[in-house]
Length: 77
Image (cartoon, rainbow, N blue to C red):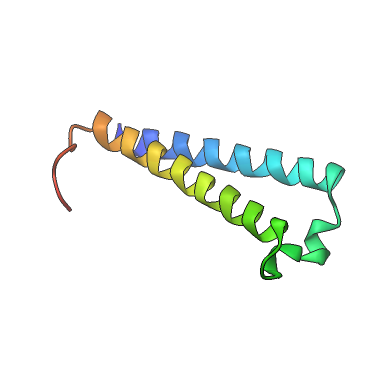
């Protein structure tokens, strides 16, 4: 059961990634080469970090839900 949940989660993450890539290709293809998020003290850098922390939060929630479903909540690894 756990392997099935993991495959479902990976599939969900891949779908999200692919949807974002497709949106970027259409709406902002320049982001692949501009890399303005690397420039210090820019709004682009702040937005990049905001998006990255949001993605990490999504993954943590996804993995936490899997852990809770498996009955291992509260068990330290």
